[in-house]
Image (cartoon, rainbow, N blue to C red; front, side, top):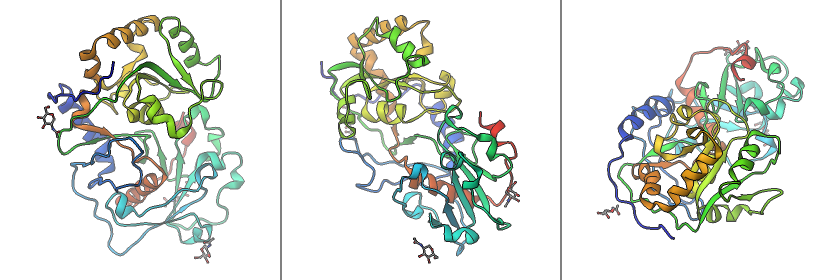
Length: 362
Ligand SMILES: *[C@@H]1O[C@H](CO)[C@@H](O)[C@H](O)[C@H]1NC(C)=O
Ligand SMILES: *[C@@H]1O[C@H](CO)[C@@H](O)[C@H](O)[C@H]1NC(C)=O
Ligand SMILES: *[C@@H]1O[C@H](CO)[C@@H](O)[C@H](O)[C@H]1NC(C)=O
C-alpha cells in the first residue's frame, strides 16, 4: 500500500536534546557559518532539494590576505574529483587546494590519503619538510581495512577521518537543521526489505545474520552475485522499500558509512543498522530514526518487529517524524572534506604530532 501521504508535524519528543547534542558535537566542531546548498551540483535526481541552514556560532575569522596552500598528495584511490571554492561550499576564506606536487615546498599542509601510500613509505613525500608545514593523515576506511598503520607513526600533525575525535572530522554524513519545519513525504512503498552488498563473504558476521533473518522475512539482495542494481536506479529502487539493511562491513566506533546515509536515509527507507552500538548511532541520528539489530535478542525478533511495522502505518511513520526538522546532508564528497581541512587550518595555529597514530586508529 502506498504511504505517500504527508506527515503531520508534531514536535518530536527527542528533538531538543538531540539538536543540542548535535551542536555540541558535530556543529561546533565544524563551526559552519551556514551551509547554503548550491543548486544543481550535488542534489541527486529524485531527492528533495530542501535548503540547509545551520544555526551555528560565529563564523571563523580567517587571517585576512593569507591564502593557505593545501597539497593533496594523491587523489584518493586515484580518482580525480572536482575541487570547488571553499568560500562557496562553506562560506569561509578560500584556500589554494592543489594536487600539483610542484607546490610541495610552498604548501602549508599536505593531505596524505592512507590507502594510496600505505603499501610503501617510499610513496610519501621525500626530502626536507618545510618547518611550518603540516601533514594531514586522511582516511575514511575502517581500521580493519587500513593496512600498515605502523608506517604512519611519528609523521603526521593532524588526522582527518570519520572518527569524531579526529582533528578534522569528515564523517560519511550528518544532519542539517532546517530553518522551517517541512512536511516530509514518505516515498511510495511497495516492498519490504532491501540490502545492497558488494563484498559477499559467507563467513562474515553480516552475511550470517542475513542468513538467519531470511528464514523469517523476505529480503531482496542486490549487488555482485545478486540482483543487479545500476547506480542510476539505486535511489528509485531502494526508495520503494520500507526498510534497508545498513550493515557495516566491520565494527568500529563512529564507522557509519554511506550504507546508512545514502542507501537508507537518502532513499527514504528506514535503516536497520548493524555496526557500532546504538549509543554511537545516536550521536549522529535521533533514536527514532533507525532500528538497531541489537535492539532484538535474535534475527527472528527483528523479523517479527519489521512485520508488525509493515502492518501498522502509524508506527512506521514515526520513523520519519525527525525529518520535520532535520535533513540528511547530501554534501559528502571530496571537495567538502578538503574545505573542512582548509577551515581547520585557518582556525588552529597549534601544531602537534600524532606520534602513535596506529595506536589511536584501531
Ligand atoms: C604545477 O605547478 C607548476 C608551478 O606552478 C606549474 O609550472 C605546472 O605547469 C603545474 N603542472 C600542472 C600539471 O598543472
Ligand atoms: C504541512 O502540513 C500542514 C498540515 O497538513 C499544513 O498546515 C502546512 O501548511 C504544511 N506546510 C508546508 C510547508 O507545506
Ligand atoms: C609535524 O610532525 C612532524 C613529525 O612528528 C614534526 O617533526 C613537525 O615538527 C610537526 N610540524 C609542525 C608544524 O608541528
